[in-house]
Image (cartoon, rainbow, N blue to C red):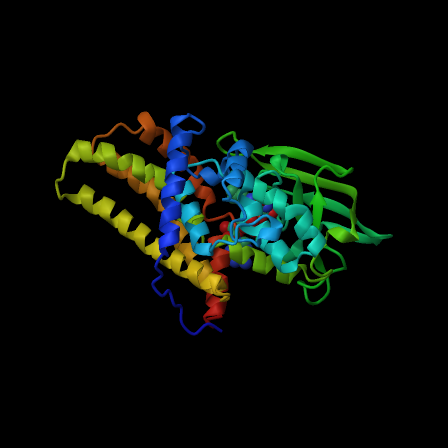
Length: 386
Ligand SMILES: Cc1cc2nc3c(=O)[nH]c(=O)nc-3n(C[C@H](O)[C@H](O)[C@H](O)COP(=O)(O)OP(=O)(O)OC[C@H]3O[C@@H](n4cnc5c(N)ncnc54)[C@H](O)[C@@H]3O)c2cc1C
């Protein structure tokens, strides 16, 4: 049981600030060359070419050991890189999952052969992974997955269906959560994770278009797909524990409060031109957004700093995700109200474009990576309240 939630103040080391300048210079060049258009929620936009450029700069897998393609840099440096990429609205979706969670998971549970085979490609921005957890009747309740792997000579035969698989159509591999023995009283027993290469025979992939018409999600069907023993991640039957630790990597990073930062950034210049320096309700409203953002950043940075020291902070990470994603839903709405009250056009220019994207995308913030209702249950349990 966690007795208290602690978010001690974290300072960034000088080396992280040096990196920040390098990343900003790179992004300025990319923007000037027209290689990307800043977007809201840009980690939902994929550009394999952009990911390869980050790989060439040594900015993917940057905390991993050199022998797996990493650069052995600190988590706080990676944090700064992430905040700069998201603030700029850069298209980081192609490598997002592999860099954020597949690599760390392979470091923790993978075999040496798996690490050497997949991690250097991830770090070069040439090998992308998708997450195969959710199914039509198993989202929040992941223990209900029905995708099944049966023992065969030398491996496992996989059958089932995954949905909402982000960027699986650009990915080379998927980590599939499946049942390897029947459900028992302990619903979490008998689940395993398999590393499935997506060009294996027996896999069908269909796009699921989202509200914006964007092809981001997929449905992936496995029909007698053979997965060799060498592609089992960790222990057969240990999938639940592994998935829970994988989700912890997902929850407290800057992507939980910075997804719509480009909207705020694009509001401030035109707003200042419109209202000057008057200290009225509009500046107060902007101030309220900025102070929430600064507080969330400190909380997230605090978790990042302590995770680097090996602390187990699932509850603190869940708090950051709950507060951060609620802020993500609030920001576009508040920005729209502020702009309207200032008499700014809502449908024109950079602000109008980023706002329109954000309005359509923000509802997903409190769903992806585990819904807020589920997170609050986990927080309550962690605090001994239920
Ligand atoms: C942008 C985006 C990207 C995603 N990418 C992936 C991906 O790459 N791979 C993948 O596997 N999945 C992915 N998902 C799926 C995501 O993890 C699920 O949508 C999420 O876990 C919720 O599951 P569900 O959609 O089945 O909703 P359900 O579990 O059916 O929940 C519906 C509603 O009921 C509430 N609810 C459910 N159970 C409880 C409970 N016990 N107590 C209180 N409230 C409850 C939920 O909070 C929610 O509001 C993605 C989702 C989004 C939005």
